[in-house]
Length: 181
Image (cartoon, rainbow, N blue to C red; front, side, top):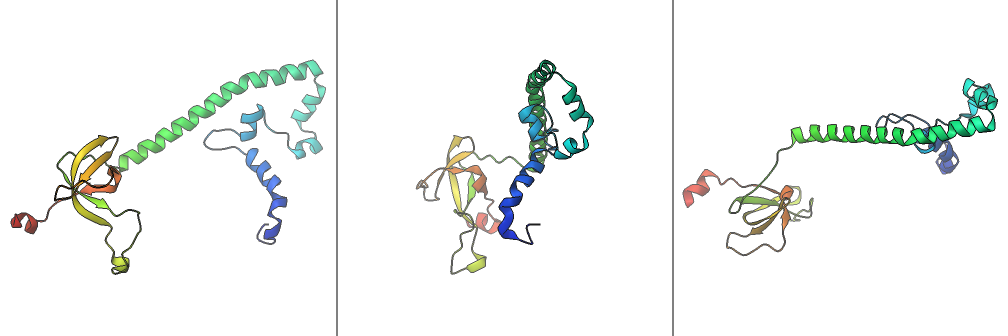
């Protein structure tokens, strides 16, 4: 609908938000409207067709209606906690799947490492697309914790600032480099 007249997107926004808020989310297992107000939204079609839910609400007295709404609000905390538990379980499942594919990197003092050229994606004009992405080797001078390291150049001079371990990789000298020493 928006493709036909893209300048009228704002007129469709309220309908789009209504559809989003009243449809079930996979992560929580419930609708955002129900998480906010404690019950499902009454759709316009339900009013014109006189659904069972609308008919029952019309039959209740004011006190019964208030009692039912108060009970729904009391139950809402439990529903919200269940939705939160589902989200946490889903995030843990994603984290486990991610952790299976990743390898933890840790370096010790004295290890030789490559350092990625930061900021990522920068290129040397003289090399063009063949620009190197790693530089080094550097020596791990100090392990700072939480994956941070202080590097030093081969001549012993300290690197300017600490760096996160995700921007490092182990340096393995080639056989001809080892023969030269």
